[in-house]
Length: 333
Ligand code: EPU
Image 1 (tube, rainbow, N blue to C red):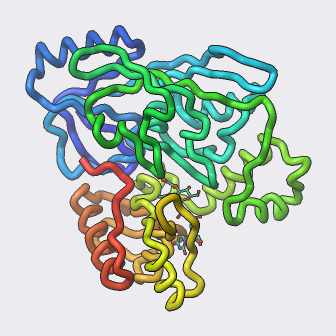
Image 2 (image 1 turned 30 degrees about the vertical axis):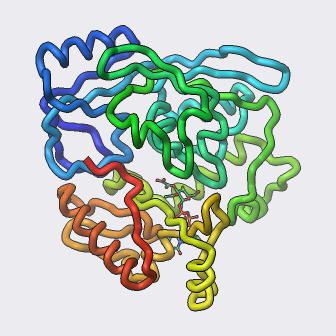
């Protein structure tokens, strides 16, 4: 059974099981134990952040749990529960239509709600943890349900306990979001305030729909469409370095983009890769995107190993030039 992935890599699993309720997931777990006992289990979303290096020797699970419902609300806020199988961007569009705000900047990020909570997706100065109230899941070992309050999820930049110590142990089933009924545009991320003015709009009258459209336009201009060219968005994380290291680099490269981070200074991996001469370059059927060097693309017919070779070549050159170890953001399976 072919495994869906936006890199467009051919990879097969022994079995692929989708489920649309918690009960159906528990039944699927029984089936896996009965028929495929001992084989590994991989839970995927839409496959938009995965790189398969080979066929998967086990069972792939995918959530189709849908449903969006209000759990509670005040005049200022709403608590909304969304099924992990909902498409994240459809949820954002619906939230904006219904007057629930806070996720506009995450518009057009591919993937499902469950994966968004695992990855702590982020863009344009907002991370999904900013609006997550609670995450619900089911243990893949014993089928027991569990809930995590946002501060128990270990969220950090592109990190969560679901990506680390709980990786492979739980399926996220539903996520509860705390959204605001008052639209407060977040434009502090470099370039966003400028994009608003360029679109002939002003911050004071900007609507959430307009901000969503601006974000969509920026993303479409920079990021390759996986339907046209296989990719998984940013391939690497933006590295965080010590202040001393950042200062040293800034003396040599005064134009280097840099942002304050919780444990040092965050640099732009795309910039580092471009400076290392990789932007737009190919290695066999794998290439670095020509408008955003943080994105690796499948030019057609690439295997996971081809993409990995390119990843290693880039890492080596960036390490040599800047003394920085890039770390993949994509989950390599
Ligand atoms: N830059 C370059 N050359 C490049 C790419 C970027 O010089 O080829 C420079 C830009 O000029 C800018 C800086 O690097 O000064 C940052 O670039 P950009 O704003 O495009 O964002 P990013 O840091 O490369 C991150 C996220 C994206 C997210 C954008 C916008 C990560 C790993 N990536 O990219 O997320 O859309 O910010 O917020 O944090 C994803 O995770 O798949 C993803 C696309």
